[in-house]
Image 1 (tube, rainbow, N blue to C red):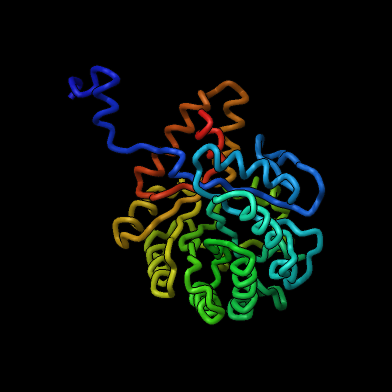
Image 2: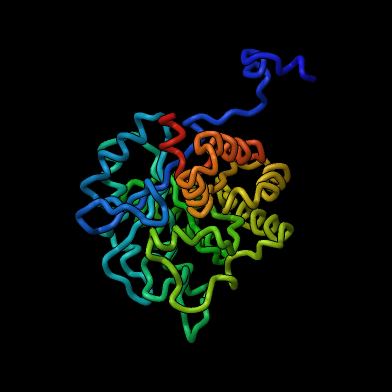
Amino acid sequence: MRRLRKNEKLRELLKEYNVTSKDLIYPIFVHEKNKVEEIQSMPGQFRYPISKLKEITKKVEDLGIPGILLFGMPEKKDELGSESFNEKGVVQKAIRTIKENTNLLVITDICLCQYTSHGHCGVVCDGIIKNDDTLNLLSRIALSHAKAGADIVAPSDMMDGRVNAIRSELDKNSFEDILIMSYAAKFLSSFYGPFREAAHSAPTFGDRRTYQMDPANILEALREVELDIQEGADIIMVKPALAYLDVIFRVKEKFEMPTAAYNVSGEYSMVKAASKMGWIDEKKVIDELLLAIKRAGADFIISYFALDYASL
């Protein structure tokens, strides 16, 4: 076997998997303040105002990364997250700006947690997250993003039936060509901590275990994915990635659907922290972890490392 590894040319010729810029999607946080803010728990990541989106998205495009995943942080929050479907809201304005200045694919997160005063992903009544009452709001968000020019809407809320509700609303309004990328298997993970600081989206009470998945359950994940496919999802996602490589593998093997994986904030921040301490070679670790996600079966990877990786 060692004969196959004896020089660089042979190793490259026989490489089974490779990750390029075209395999990556870069998440971008946009807010309504008129300044760029670094996210303390995610070194090298920022909240951008609308006025700076042209600069950062042009950089993404120039590096050969095909698209971005957009998260919005409004100034106003209320119980129903009304700013999420405001046609003049922060994400809606950001979509238009990006589309005017680049040819990037624009994917938008469909959820309520950044917009609600309680920080949960659905309508709350007497401390209970109400599944069916939330579907209409999610559909309104998706429609407003489609009208603004989004290419793909990505529901991350984990409410049952939301893919069907969004597909019906988009089709009814002549947006049949808008894709749905479902966060189909989204686990209740401790790796989301830095994101919640970045997006100001931590719940003010309880947690999300009644709608996000138990990390112990892989058969349940497969059922979740199957339901979303039946409801009309065009792309399915597993989130997080590194601790769930087995789930990515099983999902891709079973369904053979376009499959995304989200290399989440905690995974990013751990690498950055260890690199800062001099404990790891950051570039080599990034290479290895992205390769592992691709090897597990992801067709593309949503990653905060996208700019670093493409630049290197």
